Every structure is written in C-alpha cells, then in structure tokens.
Image 1 (cartoon, rainbow, N blue to C red):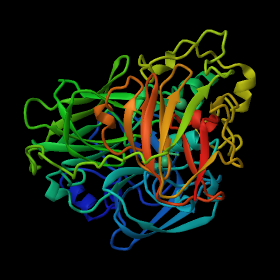
Image 2: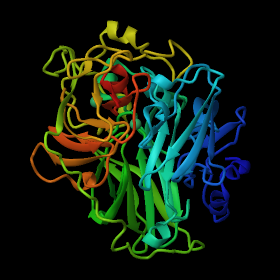
Image 3: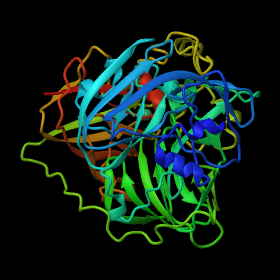
Image 4: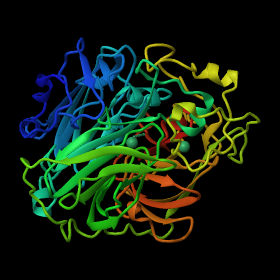
Length: 529
Ligand code: C2O
Ligand code: CU
Ligand code: CU
C-alpha cells in the first residue's frame, strides 16, 4: 500500500491512519499495482464526506490489484482500483456525479437510499463508457449503513465481483449521544465481506458454470475490504463493526471463535431501539449489520463464519496506543420502531422466487454435481443445492462460461436465462410487473424455491418483517428496518410503505440478491405513482 493512498480520505481517515489504522485507496493512479497481501493490518476504504460540499464525485476505473501476493488481477473500482470510498451522507440536497471510465455501461445503484426511481441507479439508468451522469437528490431518512453497486441487467454479478461496490454511512451526526463508537478505523470498522475465486497464479477469476448460476458464485477465499485474513488493531473496549455482505452469493453465519456474545445494533435500514444480544448472526448477500463487540476482556478473538466448515474472516489484536472511548454497550439507542399498521383492504402481493425448468421451482438435472474442489473445503453458501447439475453446454454458451473477470464477451445479458423467474416470469426491462400507489402500505408474502435460500430485496422502501412461515415472531436479525431478507425455507410476510415515485421509465426493482439469480432473471420491476 502506498502511503499516498492513506491521504485519499477525509480528515477522519487521515487521523485514523495517523493512529496506525487505515486507508484503502489509491486516488486516480491506475498504472501502479495495489497490494492487498494476506495477514496484514486491516485497511478501510477512504472516507468521503459529502456534507460540506453537498456532492459526491465517483469515477469508475480499472486497477491492477495483487491479492495475497499472487499475479496482479485487473479489477474495477470507484476512484481507485478496487471497490470504492465510504461515502458519508446526511439529510439534505446531494449532487451525485458519476464518470464512467470503463469500456462498458455501468450504473450506480444506491442500495437502501430512499430516493425516486429516476435517481435509484437501477438497470434503466446506465452510464455509457466515457459518459457522465449527474443526479440532484433530496435526501432524508434514518441513519443506517447503506451501500452502492453497479446494477446493469445481466452484468450486475460480474460488475460487483470486479469491484464496483462501496459503502454509504447515512448519518445524523448523533452517534456520540447514542453512545455508539464512531471513530472511523479505530473503534468503528467498516467491513466489506466478499468471497472470491483465484486461478493458480492468484488472479481473481469470474468463471461461473451453470451450477454456479444455480448456487450463486462462491469462492474459497474470503476478502474483507479486499484483504484475505486481515488483522484489525483495536483499543480494549467496545468496537462497532459495520458489515455489508457484498458477496455475489455467499451466506455467512457470523460469530466469534471464542463464542463471545455480541450485540446487534443496526440492520439494513436503521438502528435498533436497543442492543440485541446474539452469538450467531446469519447474514446474506445485500444485507448490512452493525454490531458491537466488547474486546476489553480476554485474548482478542477472530470473527468467523460457520456454514459448513468454519471460516476465519478477521482477526483482532489490541493496540495499546489506541484509547477505548466506549466501554459498555448503550442501554438504548433509538426510539422504538413504530410498527407499520395494515390499513383496511391492504393490498397483498404474493411473490414467488422460482428456478429450474418447471413451475415447481425444482432444478431439472440428471447430471452429477461436479466435485467442489475449488471451494477450499467450504461450500457453506447455502443450505441445500436442490439437485444442481453440471453445466450443459447450451447453458454454458449463453453465459460465456469461463470468461475472466471482465473484458471479454458481451457487456450486457451475460447471464440471461428463462429458468430463473418471479411468479413464472423472467425479468424483462420493457415489462412493468405492477404499480403501487404512492404513499400506500402494502403486504408482500414472499417465498423462495428451488431448494436454495434466496435473499429478497426491494428498491425504494424499507420494510418490516411481520413473521416467517413458521408463524413465529421475526428473527432477531430481522427485527429492525430491512430492505433485504433471507428467505430460509418458507415465506416471509413483509409490510412496507412507498413514499417516493417511480415512473415507467425509471421503475424500482425487486429481486433475489444472489447476483447470478438476479442477472439470470429472478427480478421484477414496478412503478410507484
Ligand atoms: Cu443491491 Cu437491486 O440491489
Ligand atoms: Cu437495491
Ligand atoms: Cu435467489
């Protein structure tokens, strides 16, 4: 990491860097190789504070990134070679300018930001190579961890995999009053979780087979902010971890190796009223969690994931030069969440995510699944694999099987099939699926099929999970405001209000956040008027 990169962020990032911390960023330099070695000190993306200027400038670019000491990979990023800055947003006007320096169209979808469809960055707002797009938005919502990523239909999976993703911290500046750690890179760590595949020389590859489309693309190596097995140096006190699952398909079950309890304090759309103690936290693609963990006692633990074999994600080490600012979790964080109340005659929609060659959602295959040799001993992504088979050649042809991360094959519609559907229909950009009345509350009963778990996401709203199919109350991780929910073996009942408009030109999306499923057709779109 070149020292210059440390200065790319805001004063806070610079201060954190001075304190021995962070700074994953290279400015605009593309020629040099960014080194992201294994087992090194955790770096955080540079902080980009939009509140003084009221604007954010993002430029996509290619980079050369050396992961874990291997051969350099060609990667993509925003304002740097891989991934993007952490953007600080607040209520008020925001001008977002996007320059596309890549040779194919991209979009910037603000996942979790509550803005009208025309500013949402969905598939209908592609920015051509060399072009600029500028959005003037009026922001207003609860503080939360959001994220941004490219969302070009048929190419989202490859774009995000290549690095077109970053974090948004939506803030009201009141975290100190709440007793929440908030010093970026010191007691407040931003973690972008992704799993990746590498070729024998260490180059990152995106080469999904049809089986990988069915399961979602999983990789054996887990990266945190692009680094494998990093070590976070932290003070002896309460540490806040703000984590986004930016993996294409991997579902994690977060826990610490010594099974110490931790507290969930925030979900996709906002903070919880009070910390909720947990030991294991299921965590699916698209979701964000904020947790507090007390690292004062005992040897510093390792953050792990258990789904199948345990995977180590992030080690901690004490740094005695860093002062612990918060030493106990707050009793209360936010006002109680007002339940959305179903009005008489509420519109109820049944939404069924389907995959496979017939209407039962079962995957049709008479072939043996190939040995999962490249999974590094941890398949762990999904509970079941629904009889997924090896790639028949005709399918492989459709998706350019075996292309490198990017740079070859058609830019769009790389992964388009007709056997990934919602309510019997694969996504079409020119077909509206329904209209929602602006300001109304709706109930969506969503179910997932095909023998895998699907994380379901809706644009333009945050929802409350009313219940799971089992009938019980929502799981702890679903007790706050959500925009993405994991459907594990059954239906979830979601209640939501739509406050912003979305026209036929710029509709909102709803889809599975396993990006290969989404690209392959497990998506729909709707207007709000
Ligand atoms: Cu994060 Cu429509 O996606
Ligand atoms: Cu989204
Ligand atoms: Cu899915």
